[in-house]
Image (cartoon, rainbow, N blue to C red):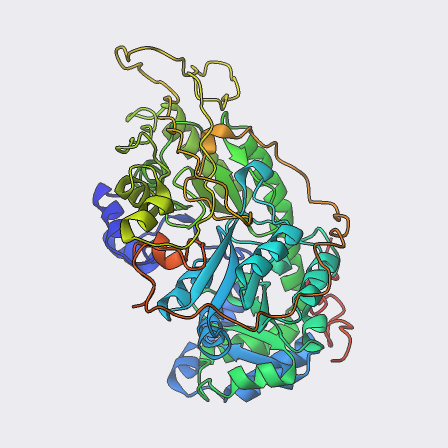
Length: 573
């Protein structure tokens, strides 16, 4: 593809340009898509032919009402319609959840789907971000997350299961335990948008449990599962009062005719859908193995239809992304703009083996210098000798000369106590993160001064962090969002198989919820720019602003091969 196509990434507010935009800027053929997490096996070619034959009628006439389409979907899922609200994509539902049900604050682990941080930030809510640790493979510890929520006094909690972008999975019993521990919150949201691709548990969904609880919403996607992102449709499940409140705000014709046509097709194609999910799970295992064989590349365990990978030391994600696109016509998701991530990480969608072979070949040429342009360049250092790859975090570090939010607070004259920031560990020459040796692959060596550039060099040493001064201890110690990711200080996590069921969380972590605080510190006006709300780093501050601007599931009727309501029961093969 032409080199100028990469300028589209810098001219869009989204994380990536649309496929239509990329196609227009090329010779008319789009790239192989490893960016958008879509089921590549559904709908089947025969289903596409059927939709094409009906295209004129589909786009000419109004759809039925949302109630009619919702009733058909509920018939397949065996869910009561009064507990379901269908939206024009899950993003529409997230927007209404924020407007109607989030009053003041929302907690969410990061990195995660960006709308869970950005949407409440845009409406002036406080966003308490719980950092997932790279050293633990980005696994979410629900006991620590619960303590974090209590310490912050957050009123809404969000869990994405599996999480996007890392694919981390939580077993059903742990999620239900967390929901009950948070029974006094205004709302608990369980985002199951990618759950139908999981195979670690037979029935992982909590939709049945959500309908019985007063403050729980489960969010589900259809576009991702059915391979139809262009048809914007998704749904939520909750008790009738919560679901009805959201449903009452949605336009009567918020679902389009394509969505209606697909929903009414599903009862005839249950076997094909189940087989598509089964094939994606097989491809995920195969793709993980192939990527793990690349020297220095770390692949994290995933239960989604995507894999979260860390690039070798010295590789900059935006360079890798741009070169894969221009030299190999491959589109990948570089995660430098995700809070809690950096440009050293890519999210790669699971695709058929023929496409994966093309991806692996492209990565080998870009990363290890077997292409005409040599190896990918290392990250560029900032004035603090630290680069996270995330522009917002780099800006925060640069503005405070490495002092992070403490420096911002002092500059604003804030008197509130701030959380402790862990010092960056001193790292000796060589970086502290050994790259696996491979035949014929030169390894970076510590040198007092750079010599002449090495031709065909696979990787270059990355600039190391400068230790941040340790502030005085604070009276309360709670998990805090990390402003400065420290990739070079962590060991290389080995890829793991599908996670086993974890033991129940300690009783102390999920004890009966403490009573909600009856007194709130008096407001003293808007929070000054850069000052963390209640001692926490909000999404607004990371972005560089001030933040002010009931029947049981018994299977799918009409087809023995349909999965259960969670989509997990009867995978073919």
